[in-house]
Length: 328
Length: 308
Image 1: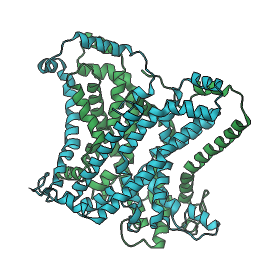
Image 2: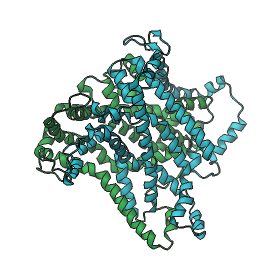
Image 3: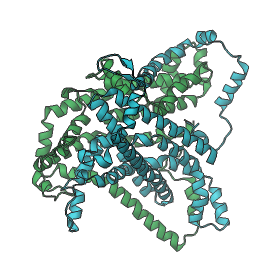
Image 4: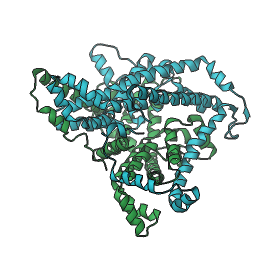
């Protein structure tokens, strides 16, 4: 992860880095035996964390082979016998799968469409505010929802949208009949995306505000001398100044695109809203955990993880080619 | 060390720009901007105000749709009712215990690993970093994790919540960046004084890292405090639930949850009173410490981004 390069103007390497480089040049390459003798205490500190990663991160990755094997609950962690691509063929032929696949793409796409640009807009607006007090207030308040549990957010949404909740009170005042929002599939995407924006817009501004402080203000003066008005200054100076941050966050967003807010959807959806709300992770949860078809669920999950990985790698490659900056 | 302007402080760039003459259009923009930002504040706070108002209101006022920003039919009976529920307090206690234990273990693992990764001369360092980084982009998925935790016999134990999420790679990278920024002379001096690696870490490095340690503790504590899904997945006994699962069952019950039959209208309304109180009681700890911890969070995020 090196937003580093992108946020920091290139400076002289700090003294410590320079020293390190000198040391490396001086010291000959050590063999493993020498390294172990010298640094065994350091290696010993790494043992437990590595065990954690191996057991709780890499073992489940390997555990995905149950997607290719028949798994019997209570049996071996890695399944009983090979069945090849049977489970993949199964979900490829399952119309229900393609339905939740489409839902995932739509929900992920619409979410990205709003949650990516809106923090940039808010950061730019905050950057223009003259009153430091107002700025601080807006920041403190808008960061707050980020710290809430998803369960609390779901509870707030249900209260606001209930038949007698605040939103329906407003509708009633306007002469509408109340709408049972959470029971109607056509409202689900709106509700989900607005709640994502509500919870994340403030927190999303932090990195942009940090990037904005690094823009050289002489650039603005030059732009002004060239006759650029405020709008053009924003367009030609501010936006290019935060572009690396934008690219980095876009890549990260695209990488998590397929994961959508699984926990939030699980809390908010119900069979009535499945037509729009059911996505790959929730479907996987129902067939895998609730119905106990572990192998089938693992096959879907593996498919999803691979798409996620491909998306990150692709986004990174495109951004490196297009703007010369990427995550790695 | 990087010195970062907290976003709230006056910035050079802005100061430089405010000196110019203000056109009429720009003044109009300033007014609109202030209005938009005020609207952001109002929209963000409104759900909280609404829920607090409901928590103090009578059931009948809520069912008739009259509670908005002010309580109607003010009473404390719902609070008394929820607070006298022993299951609620038991689950609340569970949340505290889980959060403390999980944060402790996470801190030990993260600190040790970050310290190791910050040592540039270490042979095999790149591999150790890659082991952590790769998990950011690819994960085993829900089912293999579920099978693993069940097979390890962690169901219905605190370890099902603590262990699978013990190290956050983001936090790890933040700490690694911080350790890397420490002057190497300090540790060389410690080595000259005859301190071992363990001694250097415990007596020299950690005392100088209090700020970043505090930030990390907060990051972990808030995420464990808020988490519900691991408990929901791996715990069948209600006496082991954290309070988030208690709340989840409450709201799922009221909305019909995943049951086909929608909950009856009256059940929904009675619950909405109790739901409101439970939500308020669950977020109060976060809301009370929020003003004091907010800037640490912002610092942590920027440290991670700038130096990661």
